Amino acid sequence: MHPDVIADLAVLDTTLKTVESVLDVEELRRRIDELEHQAADPELWNNQDHAQQVTSELSHAQSELRRVQDLRQRLEDLPVLYELAEAEEDAAAAEATADADAERAALREDIEAMEVRTLLSGEYDKRDALVNIRSGAGGVDAADWAMMLMRMYIRWAERHKYTVEVYDTSYAEEAGLKSATFAVKAPYAYGTLSIEMGTHRLVRISPFDNQGRRQTSFAEVEVLPVVETTDHIEIPEGEVRVDVYRSSGPGGQSVNTTDSAVRLTHIPTGIVVTCQNEKSQLQNKISAMRVLQAKLLERKRQEERAQMDALKTNEGASWGNQMRSYVLHPYQMVKDLRTNHEVNNPSAVLDGDIDGFIESGIRWRMREQAEA
Image 1 (cartoon, helix red, strand yellow):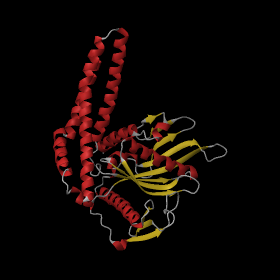
Image 2 (cartoon, rainbow, N blue to C red):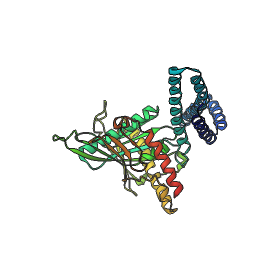
Image 3 (cartoon, rainbow, N blue to C red):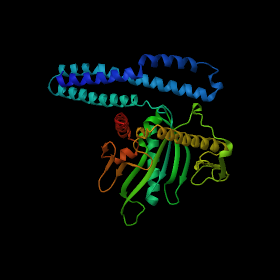
Image 4 (cartoon, rainbow, N blue to C red):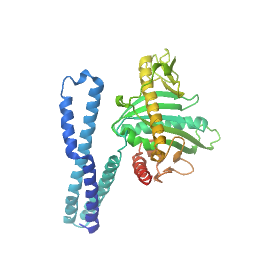
């Protein structure tokens, strides 16, 4: 093998060993055995919430173990691929070497992506994510942009086989969304998506302008960790005003015919949460309360950070700060303004291909926190 290839394989091996060490593969196997034992207990489903937590953690642990084992096997196979290529002659050798080089590049990308996961060590990083999207300046174009962003994140979740649960969609009059709230249910969803928080800017020829002029639109993305029972976020009944009303926008049977939508107002803080995507008023109230608890948890976290003078450990793209620009005209580019990571294929990005932005963002955040 060429010395450069040998050196590169050594670097990949060192990186993968670091990943294996942080994940603690032996402990991961032990935890899988323990969870499999719990999952086999016929009484597990007497408590559905606990059962879902166990099965979700088991599925995630098994996936992590398979993933790191697959990376190790691919790395061990690479020298064999190069040896087979060297045994070939002329054109066949060149083609086999090119295939080995392509696999090495793909493996490097996959190992680096796995390495990023090990950087998620924040208090709430392991949790599900609650995503709020609101249209900003730009009128109907901004409302359409908010809907495009919601689709982007849902498509990203679908690519990774993550579950999405939509709590609320408030449709704009002409097109698009005023706001939307949905949960992404997967281990480390919050730690992964929290880097997306901030203002997203779109530049394009407006499809709503009959003169075909260029329009700049803004939408705000907020990402919160889903509240768990251990968070002790208690909301006295007297502090919440509950209003019910009829759902608006497109929907199925009975969605627009009963007062099933719920609006919760937290009187001490003025925080307002709505949920209208379930048919049952009770279901909407439960979902809205989850969102309200998440917002209050985030408020509590911010207050604690302020008291500890640790505001610099925030995501770096706080609410309202422009963090990414999507340009569809006069050229094609998506650029993160914090990391300078850019892609010249906005269509792929808007179809959910955002892992590159997320990974570079997580690395950037780690550097910022280290410097702070």
